[in-house]
Length: 189
Image (cartoon, rainbow, N blue to C red; front, side, top):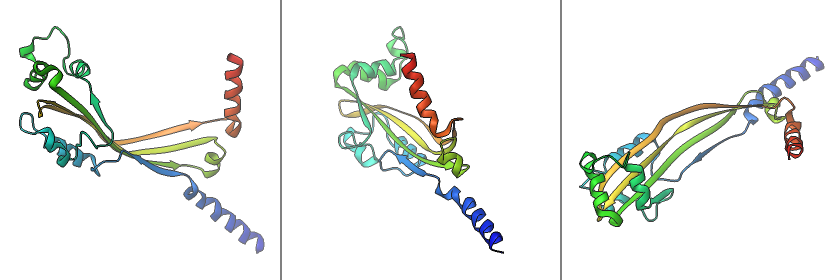
């Protein structure tokens, strides 16, 4: 009887170990809770209508915003002009205006993301670093805003509305794997 109780308690303890696996989230602090919100706010920025002073109200603060990159003028041209041989009249009107404004043209790249990392699988295999499976879900978006003389002349977005990937790490030597890798690196150098 005592043996059966011990086996049952042991089985329950091992079954509950999955909840002991690490999990967490990472994100870029920002005003948007989802890809759809960020994309909708980006779509509210219209070329030749939106002023730079209006961007913070839309969630794109060029001065105090986090994870915003100021893009220097030479890089703007490198990003927006596909090939130096393309005639100016063939470019987007906003890009043309930026090129003509030269140093008065400014650009910002806003990056927002939200990701959740959840470990799955066997607690013991994970604990001993033999096999780790991490499910990563979330989203990310980049919004490029180009302005000339205080008015937005071009806006573009890129991103991934649904990230869903599984990272698998297998270490046949378990907790001894890093020592083997370190020794191998020493031998190679």
